[in-house]
Length: 396
Length: 118
Image 1 (cartoon, each protein chain N blue to C red):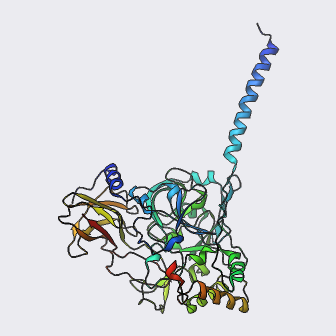
Image 2: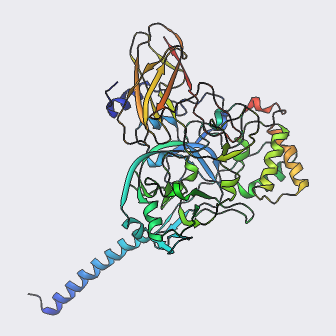
Image 3: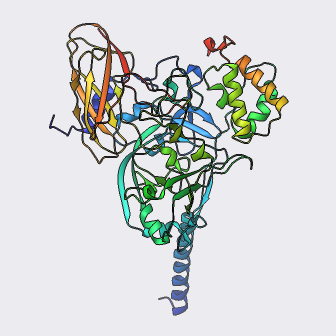
């Protein structure tokens, strides 16, 4: 298992050969009904339509055969319906203020003058996998396609806050974007981080995705990147950073995006938590990308099982694969690792001896021992999905 | 052999062309980045309260926010509509809210039997 390199080309070639043509690979047929259709939004490729205003678009998981998710294939998720559809580069400014020594009004040129930082990181919607929750819960009925692995480039938030100069007694830092509520009574989408978190080295304001401009629907011209944490904090079309001398406490922190205050972030299915805390770090998970659900394989021929694994910023230690519904597990070969925030590709060669029906499973463990549960956890908003999933295949 | 005036004119025209090209480039660089969102219409199922539901829910979001949800009990739809009013600030009166809840429970509810045809 010391071999940490396998060629991406091999991965893609084999993956392509094995994959059923189904764009919805991995999503059990019938779960989401016939309403799921592909749709084309500007600067995006055909994505699975969840909702159109504000847009929620899901990536077909076949794209996850690629180590880096293309910009036009990345999922889209907005909260309130007045989303930015036009940005004047000359007028756009990132305003930084509040409990600071200086007020900043940064143009894109100013932002690009800060030291440039670049890394690959998984972006994942808090509700990724919500559609699999049982009992079902309200909200965007995502399959596994509300995620992607992107190379982000931008300026350190720490450097920007340093230029503004934090005053003593700073508690939270809030982040607002160009999106606005359709009515004054609707809470604006604003998120916050505790000041200690906001000053972490790796948090950046990204102005490039995979060395190109951000698509408008993914937060053009710049968005916050909080690697390892769920994307709810990765505020798109960032326009205002405000340092606060008291806890932020507005709707999207105080009421929404919270999980049960319990080590598992879960409660008994169908029950309400007594106490909740804001969502933060992503749980560790893996996904079998190929073969797809109900794929047909040949007995006595080698089949490559391939997938991805990632964690909340700790890197992946190992991925175990089972081809017999979890009776026994064997170690998969991990691919190239490009930093602790990126996902890791893995592969496992299986030579099924006899025809029949099989359930393939994968279980990732991160470098601090975090792993995946056999049974799904449950919470009312449908967050933290990381159950060890089963892919049914037929061997003939 | 061209006289100095002709040479001056040629150079001036050449500079003008360069400047125009430069301006065009600058304009394209500074252009407002714009997208146009597609218009996607969603038809709700026929039923009592359909128009009220379309009118009020449609103020803030497209109606696929209804059609893509799993079938919910009347209690769950009541909680969702109340959340929209009390938490998300939807301007819906109690009477209209009841119409909407009854419609959603009937057409997109667990009791409707219609989830089987989803």
